[in-house]
Length: 194
Image (tube, rainbow, N blue to C red):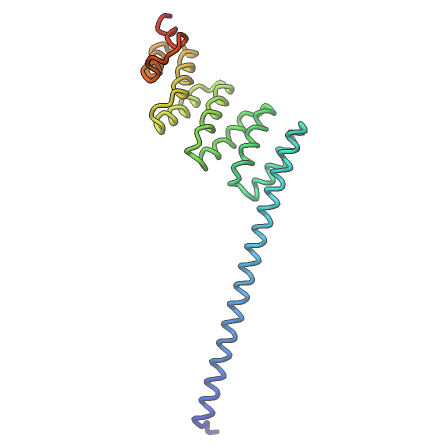
């Protein structure tokens, strides 16, 4: 059987057209799959946000254990939800689970290292757990990142005083006095006269 040049051209054109149609079909299926995955992920995140909002309502009603369950489910889908982590930390602290609160706040701190409120909350929790070393470590991170932070200096001073470390506490107080200058209150100078 002999194939003429025109038949070969028609076969070649048909094969090329079939390849284009097949490529378009694969592209459409891939696009539809990606769109479906994106839509599914968006729905999961919205459901997680709704769970976090429901957890907030549960906290307001005093149903703290139920709120923790909702927040845990929400965070399993959306682990970077800062609001849910923050609420989980507060709820766990209220339930008397400071270690769980520390875990949630540590994640918040890792997500937003510039948010100093999580550092101070962590320090307070560590002090509540009777772990002044960890509290000092967190406050030292604030001090090294911020430079002059009177709130960190005050808390470091208080920890040092509670541990009987008078000289380091005195040094923190000197920094505070230097920063405040003439605006220092009488209470600020009491450590110098003690």
